[in-house]
Length: 73
Image 1 (tube, rainbow, N blue to C red):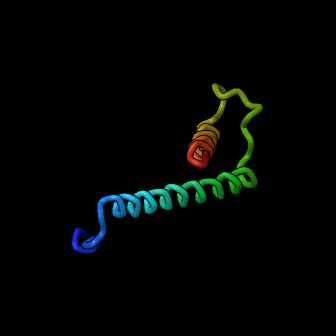
Image 2 (tube, rainbow, N blue to C red):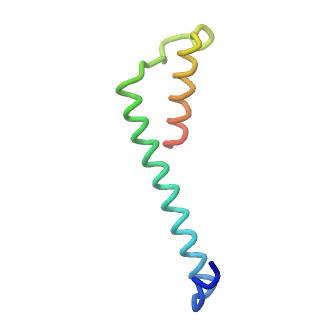
Image 3 (spheres, one colour):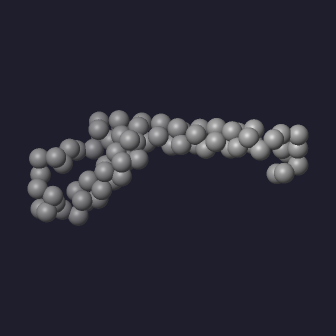
C-alpha cells in the first residue's frame, strides 16, 4: 500500500482517503433511502397502533422500518 503512494505528500494521501470514505458513506445512504421508499410502499404502517400491544411479527416490521429510517437519515 505504501509503494502505491510514493511521490505523494501526506495531505494528498489524506484527501484521497477522505474522498473514498465519503463515497462509501454516500453509497450507504443511497441504498437505505431506496430501501425506505420500498418499505413505504410494501410494508404496513404501524403508526396508529399501540406499540405495547403489537404482535411479534409486527414488532419485527417496526424494528426493521426504524433501522432503515435511522440509517437513511
